[in-house]
Image (cartoon, rainbow, N blue to C red; front, side):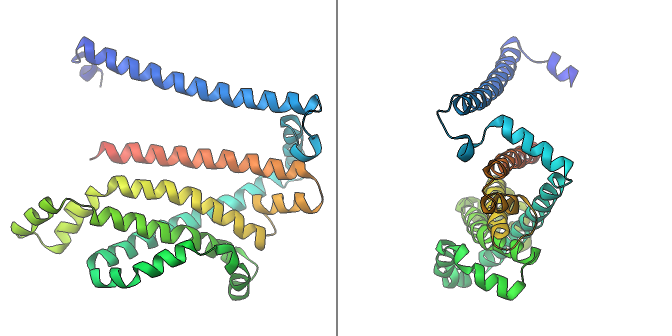
Length: 269
């Protein structure tokens, strides 16, 4: 790597240096924006401009987290939610990829079920909550099913659109050269859809988190969604705001993990 950098021209080195500086500036701006928001929030609460009872405050949230840790509840809630998110995410991606492949191979089937996919995607999933509870019971299965109902259809549509968006001229060239269906699929269609598949990962992350929290609102006895519901029930909105902040942190971490995965995959293209 050092030899590679030594072979770079002055202009190339300057370009790489500018990219690094720009990345640092963005990170600093994001950190300052976050710190500024937290400070403003704390000041407005302390001055009585906004209600501490309704909006809590950063200091109250820190105290709530310490209280949860002392009561041995904090990491349990996070673990349960992360476990449900992981299972739902993996199932959503795997099933979405497989079903998208089936639809790509069987165009007639894709045309038949296309309106039904759109209909299911637009259906408010929370309306199915009572049915999900009756079928699966008040347990983790209901939470995972709720998350799948939210992320799976979007994954199928996104990945399938990536498959059918492959350049027609290159596809005809592969067929002209005698490539088999398997070769076209593995050497052209899937590699050409990497960007779309990664985009579906990003969508799936946020949708899965939404689905898991909705499921926890309905049935869970632990997890961040349960913490928010419990805080509402006992009129302790510090729990509610703590849950919201934790969800924001988890969402950010998951997003960064997807970005790292994206960079690693794109390096091999």
